[in-house]
Image (cartoon, rainbow, N blue to C red; front, side):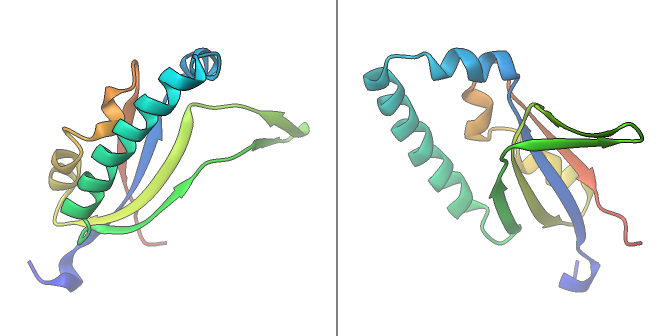
Length: 116
């Protein structure tokens, strides 16, 4: 498929907030070793899939906007990426063994981005 036929997808990396809260309480020595191991695996995955990745950004503090106003909130999204792939299935398959999935209860959601 030619580059112009590639489809764009939004990738959400999720970890339940309770898991993140527990992780924050982890012994710093254990936490550092596990983070270094995961970052090495993540770096390899990113390198192996670099042609499909358009951008990856870390999530931060979240605001919710409703008809009732604006409030601080939390959600399970810790990162997001935009990627290109030939199909939704191809995009999802690329994330089957992603290092993010080593985090307990984590998930990755891939959503087709429709042109408006």
